[in-house]
Length: 497
Image (cartoon, rainbow, N blue to C red; front, top):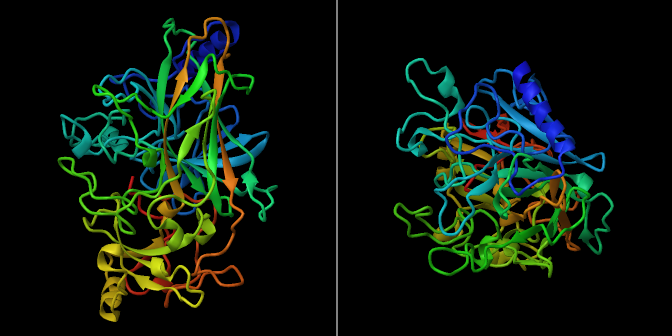
């Protein structure tokens, strides 16, 4: 461990002493060695204003280990451990960053990958992504366990395989930033407006002699844990002095950048969208990413995004969610305190994989304008919003394969954009640059149909009021004896990304 600390100290000293910083962020390359209990791709995310905690998944407050921010090493983790990275901006904690629980993921939650030549369709060979590892079925060509517990598997000789920019679909590539109430504390809710920013700072590589512009796809989600409805956001890229610098730092939305044929990397509805498994059409890949239409709608639910004239800021038009029926179901972008309940089916009897949503608690889109509509359990749009029968509900509640919990992906917005870091040998940017994320509060703070006039849940029959707070993550699971039978309460959803 002392060797690693010295190594990172040398990197820091070089950053401070050198005036030349080219476009690469400190990180890892595909094929680099995975070291035991050391974060892969460490060093690019600047942790000066971040506190990384190793915690128990039962409550995310019980500390079970330690993380060393100088070199990315951490104490031994076991099943039941996770992590939480608290991000401060202007000396105030405004964001909590989460990834997957051990052994799928490791702290600190963000890694940098450089030189992934297997990316396609014009996507950059570099990316900023989460610190996850690959399941056996995604770990090609070996098809051996790529999770972190592979180090401890005495029966299989294998090495953990980090996710890369080009890793297969649904391999947990996106890091998640929970935007906290501190980001909106001073906003007038009757008029709405931008809140306070969350800054993610990154370290440029002083050893980089490549003078060409380096492009990084940012694989992330921003999640509404602010306590207020939102109707958009703003992303800015800033230099070391926290100022825009269009000559050396810009953003791209991938327009006209698809290869080999000319086109856009992402459609307008793909730059800031809610879970495709909830809102989106069936797709036709082989095998298809989404073999069926979304649970709520076959139309993507999204915010339109555009760039400012200098390409240093990406922002939404600030209003209702476009496409799909999100607004008719839930109104403007939901905060976690109003996340809807769902019933989930563990269709493969594997708690580490995503479960299938089979019903939600609320009102249907055709009831959106009915002030007398009352919440009930409903199946999805493919089943015409039918209410489950008593027999079905009793069978679900009696089975250990079914669970009741909030549908967290109604809070989570997946972002697609690119940061372009130019040649900085003339010291234009500085040693670091910042991605700044700022939520926009909606002027419409009307509660959804399943929240009463006192601001509390109108709960499904038999379910106790044991809702999640604003700081939990989608991997946190607890039980609720009020759920009935074998049905457990999961305060956070299963992912569809």
